[in-house]
Amino acid sequence: MPGDLRMSPRKTPFLRCALATLLLGSALGAAQAQTAYVSSEKDNALTLIDLKTLTVKGTIPSCKRTRHLQLLPGGKQLMVACTDSNAADVIDLASGKSVRRVPLGEEPEAFDLSPDGKTIYVSNEDEGEASFVDAATGKVLKKVKVGEEPEGVKVSADGKTLYITSEVASLVHVIDTATAKVIKNVKVGQRPRRFALTPDGKELWVTNELDATVSILSTADHSVIGTVKFEVKGARAEDISPVGITMTRDGKRAYVALGKANHVAFVDVASRKVTQLTLVGKRAWNVALDKAEARLFVVNGLSDDLTVIDTQNGKALKTVPVGRVPYGVVIAE
Image (cartoon, rainbow, N blue to C red):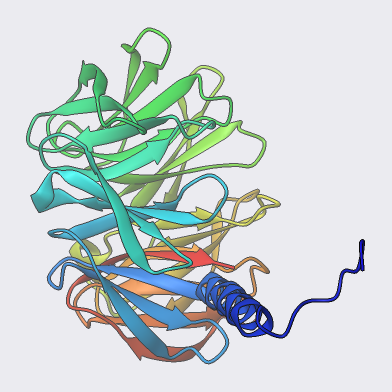
């Protein structure tokens, strides 16, 4: 009858199949969202770790020498810098497949994204440059000459200021994104690597790999206003090599991976004091927190594994084997 919304028997199997496909796709997307993604420099791939079971559930092949990685705005795609491919690989999390490649110039190691996700800021190590790349087309918009071996990249929350480390010059370059001009060079410790901004945007923390320190900069005038020195009982000073760093959302605690000292430091941000050291795998390199900030994920580059730490008591919960020479980790929830 007119207006009857009942389905005919002949259409039902097709609709059932379509519904099943839709539900399967949703289930896969939800499953992929509960995942830690770990890049591997030697395997040219990402290892996927289930956040509930803390077990490996698969791998995704990528381009050559996968290193720094981060989620794109919206959290549905992951971008991975591939140093030996001179490009970034964009992975769709729902399907677990590469959807496109974005040229990033020579030897890209680390990158950050503008707040709107339209511009990729890249450190090109061999060229001694920072590149501004259009995320949609891969076109290089601007280049900025910086010190030798640029590595760490961080853009301010308002997108107006870009920070780049130069490992050789031991400098942090402060760049105006509107003009693509260096507005200040700040001397920090030896071989600066990575950044963390306090949530209020007032302090920039910089890890210094060959100095066993973190330099703290005021973002108001970009002066050095403090230093955190790391010591590990039984470790040689030259093995205390901080690289990876992350902060809690309230800005009260920082976690710093101490490289070949094989520990992660818990740092009270207000007092700038180390409150705890946790033993992990060999060459603790990069770190990431889960959404609840209950677990810290630590990539160990020389033991080819990842350590999961309970942030409440500082105890290691589990060590998970991953790809060869793991570099970075991103949590998708």
